[in-house]
Length: 191
Image 1: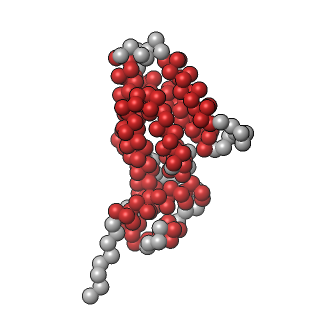
Image 2 (image 1 turned 135 degrees about the vertical axis):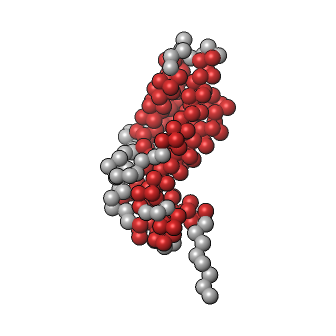
Image 3 (image 1 turned 90 degrees about the vertical axis):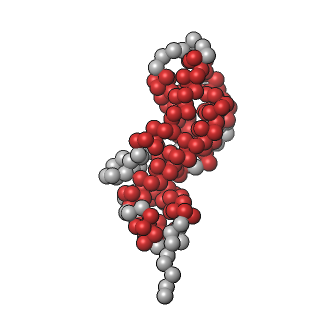
């Protein structure tokens, strides 16, 4: 009697990682489940068993990215706004394909593929909490914490996106630029 095939967590994680890489390189419309399975050294049956189909796999990959990003933000939360900003860049540079999949818009035209709102929303909570704490301590202006958090996120996101897109001269010192931006943001929101 043949032993049943078990598609475990390792296979799931490999499929998610490979999906992000392939979609980043080829675009969602050009990536087939057969491509993903071959790159992950498994079968399309594993994809159907674990995810259901292509749109569910793509959604799972984006959700996985937001979970990982959110975990990195929660780990950095104790270091305040600056720590969150540094963690944002560190995570993005360590996961460029996933970052572009999450924020690059490649999936916006692909029907049925968008992050689960609760998962994506959870990723920004550490920033909103840090803004609220800084406001309570009198270190930030007392405007809507969500608005301040989104403004900060947008500035950090823009710089990281430019860095990942290599929109720079080869001698560009991204560390210095990022430090200067974090300092400027802190000054801009100081009461």
